[in-house]
Length: 220
Image (cartoon, rainbow, N blue to C red):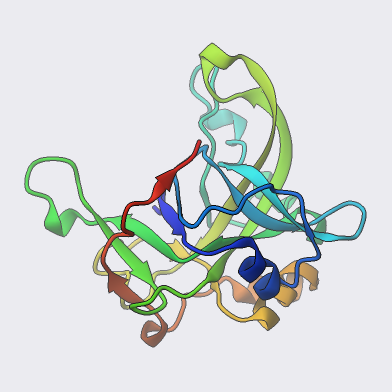
């Protein structure tokens, strides 16, 4: 499960790739390390018709039957789009794309008895900007008990069967990656019957293992 990724880009490049029109994020960090429940830039279709860059928290609401205690820590990765819980988020108004330049998967093959280290993946040795296919929703609830109930805007991204690069590290799944403006346009505008075809692994020759991002800036 991907629970860590990095964005090493700028808002101009993101808006250009996603054909975004409005920046409502206030974000322009040179590097951002994103963990669950961190705020991160996403591009979505706004109610006023604009395609906007906004800051949302990573982790969609958990299906109620799986919430333990008072806090919902959120679901970061979504695969079963046939679930009634996720089906309501498949429309164009709920879709978004999540910019990234590299993502990490825990690598048990490198474990030495301590914490499991991460292996990082990117589209080349010089990480290229791409996007995860995502979904978002407004939500009111409890993420941390000490903070109480709050209003959030949340996102998560789709996963799929892993390709030959990711499978030796994480055999269960990999994020759905969109690399071209045309793919992003399809995800953001097409009927679900067409958009769902994008839930497929990236070709092996488009992804490689890379060193961890250097000196990332952490934002919560």
